[in-house]
Image 1: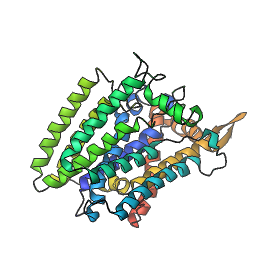
Image 2 (image 1 turned 135 degrees about the horizontal axis):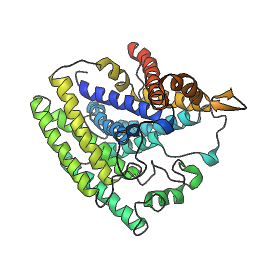
Image 3 (image 1 turned 90 degrees about the vertical axis):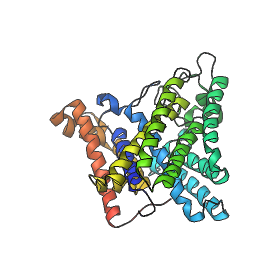
Image 4 (image 1 turned 120 degrees about the vertical axis):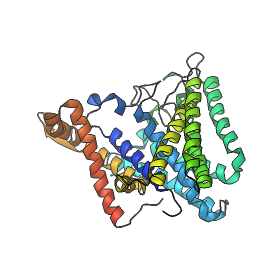
Length: 368
């Protein structure tokens, strides 16, 4: 903790808690609107969660590379590649465990952890090989390049539509429809390969924030104000760019990257001021349990949620999933449809927290 920022670990913990909350509602049909993703263009608070997690991956890089003096040694190169591969493997272990109904023909190649893995790998090499003064140029170039690729390879006049965008076209060409997500009614992956390019930018923004904080940590008053100004500026730019390249989480549009980065700048400024300057300690331990063991927390939450959906319980003439049964028989009768769905999600967060708290108390931290 002496070389880290407590506020950043807490911010990561808040992000993990929110990620679990929005991913495990009791019933998707009866979920409050702010806890749902935007259907296509637009933005909800839920859309901020994944970018914030990826943003914090970039923040953590600065601390992880410090012991290597920020030099791309063979040892560090191997560590980066190893971590990238492990994140892919953890993803497949979580989603296909216990592999009883595994089918390669229908295996989804890309997902949340693969996007994190690719972003981590790419930005690691960029920040270690490119001088700090050029990182902003690289960031802007990534966002502009993605915009151009979307316009050139998407259908004319419908470059940002669900069925005709370049992200979907590339994934269909490389992987085929059976290896993509189908939750939007057609084969389209919101963690597609091409849309991982602007996700690099989200991760790079995180690294640049940690670089800024490291240089300014001597005087906290010189930290919060510049972050607020920068965050507000990014939000304004995002809203302007939205007119030409709509804010869209599933496409991870360049305007979406700027909006999320701007909001994260403001949140970090607020949390830094609250934790580092005012030295407040309200709920610190709760969020540190998630924030200091983020991969473990994410893995536990996804594994439990998937297994509860797979576990079938007899009901009437058929069966229903354990998660659905608990919602309709425990939460909904007492609290109603919407509040019951929210209570189920909160209970799930607390269950994951209890498991992670055991690891936290024993100082067991999953490092990839």
